Length: 298
Image (cartoon, rainbow, N blue to C red):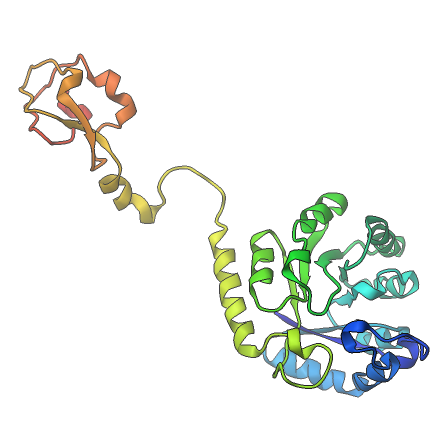
């Protein structure tokens, strides 16, 4: 439904003295971030291309100028990365646009999340969605903590979702089945490309398969009602369920006893739980052995 980029500048985003991450082999993180900067003049073309394909375009702005550049494009929403959830100044600036905000909550405590939500509320923006996230790259499935979505929903009464860093598509699919309304997934054109995120991102073929399965799961949710067979199940109900049948030939005028009745398919006759109301009544016409018994026969 949407493509999200990240809009940052290394000089505003990370200190040159910042230590490197273990999972990135302790490379110079400032130089790495600098190499990954998105040219902000590209954003308009990227948006036009996305919209031409029926896909919304937005981004995670990491500084005030990034917010301004995206506002010029009138993006429909903003994303705040897990690493930035404690930056109340950034969040307040984003919230001041009046646009919906998607907050990732990796590493966060409930207090961190509440402070971020309150930063939005203080400037009159209550359009906040919360994503469960595990800030590891890649993230192991056993640390996904999908049940935290329920915690977030109960604690904040917000739309919840899942930002996924696991390898494969099964965990995000499970998140949808567990109630995620928003799903974020890293994608790449080629998992072997150089860069920090390609190895755990999914390629277009896998993305397509994931979405096919997600839409199928969503269609399977249904309406939650249990009010008898669906129209498509009528034949199964009539022919596959059980009902009362004559165990022997029953003559017209004969009093029906319990021994004369069996319960079997099809379900075209009187339902089995009504058996006690059939026993002791007289047949008003002949009932053949093995035929279902209907009310007009007694």
